[in-house]
Image 1: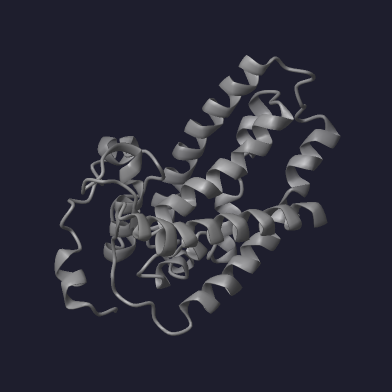
Image 2: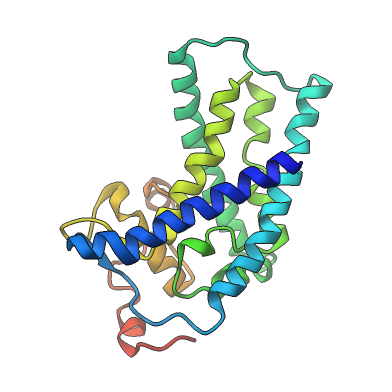
Length: 238
């Protein structure tokens, strides 16, 4: 559990700091891309995000005892010396599972039964890379369950399971970066993930997906690109 807490702390701080530097330093200096929500952050927002994220990191880190327990009891096993092609296939499979898992849980968190737990995350009307883990403990438990079902169904390599939280937090940082790193606006495809999630934070409903837009399109929950135009033009926060 101590290793898990240290691992997720390192992931959170390093990827958050990198995304902040890119969006507030390097990319604007290069003239590449644009900030999406230009409203100023409310006083104390970053401090609140750090505090909430610390709670989530404890839950993620200590929660590693569950997959560890599955391995110890024989309910799950790790693949022994898998070939590189299998590790790559597993990483791709876990990527798509992560997308589906996030969409389903995110939709559940917007139901009237669970939205009170998701409200903590949505206090960040202007997303920042440090709001990535700013969850209520219930939300952290829901999102942290992502590796459990795959582990029960398949003997994954350790490398593939390790890659899951790494690319998950990196993609989450992209969504919360509040910066569109493309030469043309609006960006399309995966480059448009930051704009889609920025609209979700600004409007609260819609755009529930992670990196991909496919599940929002299937469910009819895609927000129009001008969904938050009136709100952003007022330059105020709720």
